[in-house]
Image (cartoon, rainbow, N blue to C red):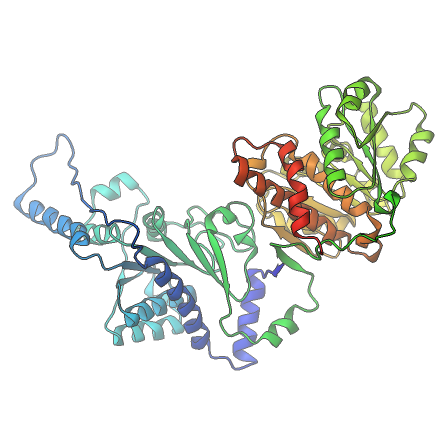
Length: 567
């Protein structure tokens, strides 16, 4: 677990450190720049096992264009020399792109530190309006000049690619040629405050960086720090060096895809100030390990102590969903799993089950309710279908059940238009929608631009736990606490994966010794998401993302749980 901070929280933390604790802002900037410079240095060290390869340049001319003039030929030769010079001088080359804010100041300081270290060629480029430079960045530019460097103006604008490329000035061509020889680039264009699309020379810089080895300062430029949304153009970083606390946008949606490896560094914010500021705030954490791990099971326990779980699932054409959910629940430690399915699919499901106990749903509702009430938790929805009769059954059970319920798939769809039933429940309810199901439930538009806020608001307003699935699955609690998951990958984007997660989640909630009564249900839900993704990662390593199946994920659960169990 690693605590996250929103952009607003980080700005406030920086302000308090400077104004209340007297930490010099230039000192914070130096520390940030040093961490970035260290990362760049690590990446540009030559690998002796790789043979050097020659770099060439091909000059392109339009088919019907007149022959180049003598001056154009001279310029072409100069461009060729710049590019081919890399073959005779293999010294690592680093380009640092700096915007007009303090993030740009981090970049300017990083360029100076790399120059002072030696062993690489460094050029720093300023992108934007110099009138908007912060005082701290101006100080860092003065230090760069004193060290023998300079902050060059970057004027390339690829807003209209074809036209811009056709009208490059000679100076712009030289910049582009030198950039093509760089071993690493530093992205210090924007910090965490970016809220509008990246355009103009900034977009040109982003495009020139992409496809290269890039180290981003705090967050890749073009990524919304709170939501992970791509704001027009965004840098694809190899490493993101983020300061003090990671930002949610590094782990949610497309932002997670652009961040590369995330390294969190301490830049000198007093730890007691950080604790003081965040101690009374709702938890917001990145999940790279379980909240508590799995404790030893009581030696004298019996199967009933590890949770009796009821699953209502399945319909014609969807006989796999209930079986996957039941197997996942059993693999996650459930003591007894009762699997209620429609009578017409019962023979098929029964053949597939060994440990779970399937039964055809009784026509007598009172008998069904009594059986479910005797369990420790219920899972409703996997493959259940959307028939009107099924929807009525789900809503009625939600009204009558006094046990914790995990609502998945068609269980969530049944709730659409009847959110008042959720609000009336006194027992714990966990919903596990993907974005489409969440949109149907809430009426919001797709795509959801701010998944974190949407999840936290829903969980708070409806006093439930919401597991909003997707890249960086978010688990939100009624007190607005939230956990952003970091495990799992595209190999899990197959029908049945959600059924596995639902079974795992219900199994953890139903086990008495895990402490559900102690109020840690949100943490258990976040743990289930972590274990599920970790099992998927194990399958991806062994089988590859194309070939892995949800059944493989179920079979990988034991090795994951064993890794995180107390010995």
